[in-house]
Length: 315
Ligand code: 8YV
Image (cartoon, rainbow, N blue to C red):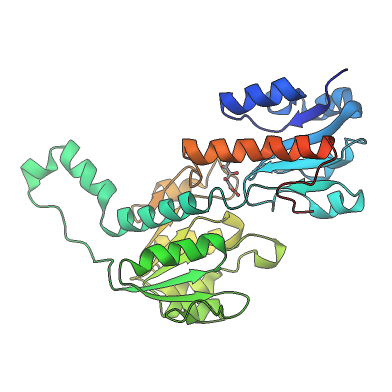
């Protein structure tokens, strides 16, 4: 029997590709130079899409696949999938929640520490010989005991807050409503108010059209010249032009970012700044977590085509 045909939107680690290639006929969209003609030549038989969080599947792609039944996302965020286009045709959508939560929280906390304590600059200070020639590295501000705001207390935000309570930080959060398990953490509904009482503001909310630029110019300015913004969610949650302006004119102290508009290309203004830590969208990037994510991508596809319940459905 011929294997079910799947459109593969981006590359995966070798172990995932091996399993997918064994179970399905994979069409490697990311290797095609002419995307539209690739879809028109191969699209008629394709019944599934395997994609990644940041790549998703847009309406044009979904509409080019008349037999499409399921979109399996390697990532918790599915904001890059056109859910309306999928819903209109009853196409199932799955993601990879839970398995990546703690790694994403770990990286966010690591970014905060690295940026606040100047670890990247400290490393350069040693390697360049500045330590020997110029002497002691400039002093930085402390992290423990300070005020942190968590914008979006979902699974990842919760894990960030839990870690930071170990740093004796004064934790406030903004979410759809107060959470009853957070008696030591202060609920502040308004993001600008949350930013105004924070030294560090973590953006951990899942992105959608409703959250676009929720971190607005006002929020950034409320965080202020001593504040730090840490984004481990999606770039669209932040008004990136306002962020760049604020970093350039020091209306915001600093930022630590794992995600960017138009990534992997990014606005060159970021690279010219010395008050931002830049990471290549790698918060879920550990071998252990990526293996679990890859297994879920496969398991959702195989469950669907074998008529079993989907392990982690979105739609
Ligand atoms: C990416 C992510 O999917 O979980 C998410 O939403 O953004 C990531 O895990 C990852 O970069 C793999 O492509």
